[in-house]
Length: 355
Image (cartoon, rainbow, N blue to C red; front, side):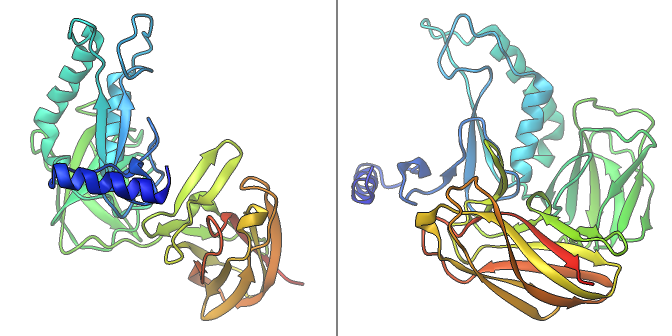
């Protein structure tokens, strides 16, 4: 569909039903909200209104021989994952020709409803997680509260909340209200959990905090004298479009269509000295030419994206040398412009000590 066709259809919708919400699948950056791919969930929170359309089995309509039903834990974890990234879960149900909802769908929806009846506070009207990544589950939030959704119960009974800077006033289980002891442990907060999870699928722990959530960016720690590899999967991404992609030959930061979006890494340097900076990226020849900069400790290295042949053909390019001192630092990659379909697919930034 051309941009003109998308615009014409949008105007028709507005004329016929002014309050109608129009899905971003209209194309050409039009619509009121974005739609992820079918059954696809972004790797991070997205700074716009969006949803994931998903199926309970493998088909949208009724199919008598499709018995590959997703489990209740899988569906609940998807719900929490999506909400923790600021999205909406559009879960499809395919009725039979007689209008009957298949029993496996009914069973799963009832169990999800039973969980929501007890834990609704941690889902409805909540905001996205302030954390980059949590090994044990997900997080949602409301003013003054963080809802810690524990999927994987720690074997040692200690839930580690990484990099939270806010004062914590109390911690308790959402269901039942049992208070839990907690302590500061460096940059982290440790919570003492019961020996077994009250809910094996998702136990919600409420952490009451002062102020807006503020977290310390996770850091990649250098082995003494060794290169520091900042991989796409570990980046903290800022903006409305940019996201981490994986699969189909991709393992990179992509969808970099807005030059205002950028990527950051926290790193802890151990070895003082000069470091050669190398970026690994892919870009089709017809989209090459975008300019970008790598910034760290007030130093800036400029680069211009070269064509590599495709979005999954990755090449490495040396940008120059920076001086790094021991300690915790932040490295940022920003686009100065976009000349093609996207800036680039960025896989890694490598900092190598020079002899």
